[in-house]
Amino acid sequence: MELQQLVGVIELPRLVLFLPELIVLITAFVLFTLELALSKELKKIILPSLSAIGYVLALMSIGVSAQFKGDTFYGSFTSDALGSLVKIFALIIALTVLAFAGRYFSSKRSFYGEFYYMLAFTLLGAMILASSYNLIIIYVSLELVSIGFYILTALLRGSFISKEGAFKYLILGGLSIALASYGAVFMYIYAGSIDLRDIFTYQGKDYHYLVLGIVFFLIGFALKIGAVPFHFWLPDAYQGAPTPVTAFMASVGKLAFFIPVVRIMPLVQEKFSLTWTLTVGVIAAATMLYGNFVALVQKDIKRLLAYSSIAHSGYILAAVAVTKDIGMKAVIYFLVVYAVMAAGSFFIVAMLERAEGWENRVQEFSGLRFNLPYLAFGFMVYMFALLGVPPTVGFVGKTLVFMALSFDQLWWLAFIVIVSTAISTGYYVRLVVLMYMKEKEKDVVVPQRSYAEALSLVLLTVLTIALAVVPEVIWSLVAPASETLFTR
Image (cartoon, rainbow, N blue to C red; front, side, top):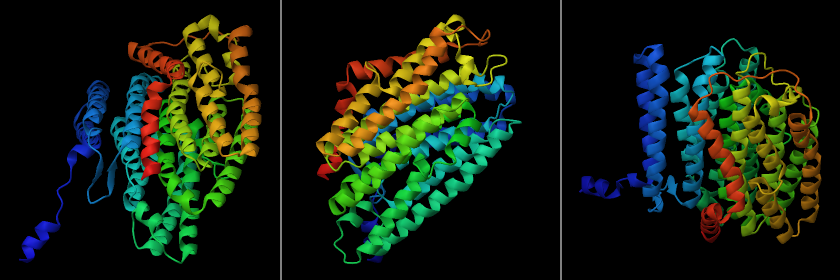
């Protein structure tokens, strides 16, 4: 009788909901095994090829798993429109990282076979993080992403800056996870549940535990996304990491770390609407202004783009402060399109780093159109997109943020968005002026350019423009994701 009761309690997992993650998990373990067995020359051929096959299969499987909605693994994993959207773009960007990584590491004489399985495990963590309300699963997947980034940041042989950036990321990243864990404990004390949906629907009286939990939880994720004043690790980590890794951190990393905050937006706002708006709004304003002001004086292109990333965290947080459905739609749209813009800009820097004598100085972009016209054009498109110039996705993203703020009558924050964008003109336009209106400082020749790199850059550049010209393509995915969370 007891055995029958036990069998009745056991719930078989609906693996079809977990299919993309399962494929990436299998890919990661296969890569791990082969990395131990293969010679160095075979690793350079087989590991990236198998990675690409695994990611393509995972991307195709999203079409299957997306037809099924709901929870599995006893409610710890959720399949919904938001998770599917994040996974699609995370896998696309991971494929483009593979296109640039091989030649980049060869040019730096810093090939590590471990890169490929660490990339796969990090991608797996990001995909799971985007699909859970369960505090334990969020913690485990957050650790998986973070540990992957710590290791990937340090994978530049003989570079002190790489090791320094990884160490700073490790220390502050560990602090962020500890704070998020404290927040999870306080929320559990309040509601006796580890599911965020149950926590915020629980009608308990000890609200101070819930408030403490939210504060610690959000500070933990603020550290991860580089919001001011929790941003100190980000410029050093972005500068020190191998540039394809920086592209992955700035795109997929930001996308993954923001999603748990997006998931609790409608839950928190129902209980603490005014407090949420003021707190997040002030952090957003400080992040936008600080990121853009400091970017103005940067002489290293990777640090400039790092502070640009901080500023864009502020733009996204401005939409997070909005308590209406349009705010969540703006957040999701901006997250997705920023991932495309950021990845493309860092990939171009990764190609330029292969040129002899290139030092990542901003001044080296002078006259780039004479030597590498296609790279100059692509970089100009990404700079205009990050600035928010039409017809690019950056313009649509910032317009949505401004609309969301106006619908919620947050005029003070909308004004700061406009001022911050005006400040950012100083360094985005400066780069375009250097490339197209100045004489070249030196000859820049990028050796061994591959078709995969060219195809990846064309894809990202086309997406940067096409998703703005035909915004309903991505809007048809963003709107259901937002509406599902709010109606839930």
